[in-house]
Amino acid sequence: MKSHTEYLLFNTKKRRDYINITDSVEKVVEKSRIQEGFVLVSAMHITAGVYINDAEQGLIEDIDEWLDKLAPFGPDYHHHRTGEDNGDAHLKNLMIGSQVFLPVTEGRIDFGPWQQVFYAEFDGRRRKRVLVKIIGE
Amino acid sequence: MKSHTEYLLFNTKKRRDYINITDSVEKVVEKSRIQEGFVLVSAMHITAGVYINDAEQGLIEDIDEWLDKLAPFGPDYHHHRTGEDNGDAHLKNLMIGSQVFLPVTEGRIDFGPWQQVFYAEFDGRRRKRVLVKIIGE
Amino acid sequence: MKSHTEYLLFNTKKRRDYINITDSVEKVVEKSRIQEGFVLVSAMHITAGVYINDAEQGLIEDIDEWLDKLAPFGPDYHHHRTGEDNGDAHLKNLMIGSQVFLPVTEGRIDFGPWQQVFYAEFDGRRRKRVLVKIIGE
Image (cartoon, rainbow over all chains, first blue to last red; front, side, top):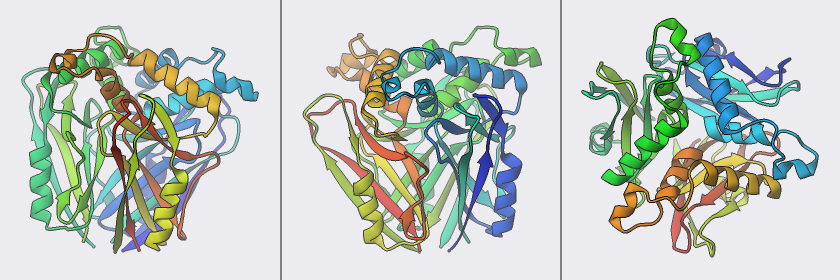
């Protein structure tokens, strides 16, 4: 069994942002030289998410509006008693999920049509990390 | 370390459908002869999901109504500017999740009571695939 | 490849409860002596969840209120035709997810800042289990 771990860095200009990280993850897989295995792509923060979906701009707008409707920015969350203002970002993270698992088959990520991996930032403008860890052979 | 990969095929008659795939996944595990490891069951499309829950017909109706309440079919999503009409299916996929991981212990899927694996189709009436990949020993 | 499996037991006094299980999961990893790998932490019941987020009391209250707003306790779910009264607990499980994957790097869980693992009980007052399975080397 081999393993290989890398960390992707983000520091978005906007509070919320959606970044296609498919190429970065593919490069980690290539570098690992693992032929059969799994890659975990996992946000290391609880106010950001990782998800698989389409790289279509209209859809990204839909996702952002939908998350903000179901877990809105603004209300006086209990969490804000700590001085924070990002209660919504924690809920958005729970809504969309913070990690995905990608299968590696014959040295490549075994994607279906239109599947792309996204980093979803819900409380940006600071340094954040995503872990990419692959195990296999 | 051993690995084994198969693809399940679906082509539902209805736009939305919920299919119990527990037996199919168990057969893949059996065929792999892996005794200890993990199985990834992952929709290869961004308008379908995979989840674990109970095979109870009333509950399946509840899940369908609940998903359609929180991510409704019908509205004029930005994504529809591309000519598509399935914006809701993308959001339903994000809501319920597109993959599950099952533990394999002593050659069998280590399920708790009532746990069953479902394929959730949100934009059917075409050929779709689910990847089942097991790694272990 | 090595593997190690344990089961955590719960029997909450309240119907809904949120329990920080980070230390318990870390002890399983230590005991396994695995240096590089993955840990699956997965609820073995379909009316409970496992998630990663902050151990902040206000946030836990926010999460509980938010889940109950989007998947409320009380309505006459179709599932209740079976005599059950826990339809909401099944939906809350689907909403927050029932499993997380943790990376193990150099013998320790590779957490980001504030990341803690929680068991979320949605239909307690009875014996329930969470599987913790680690594979790696």
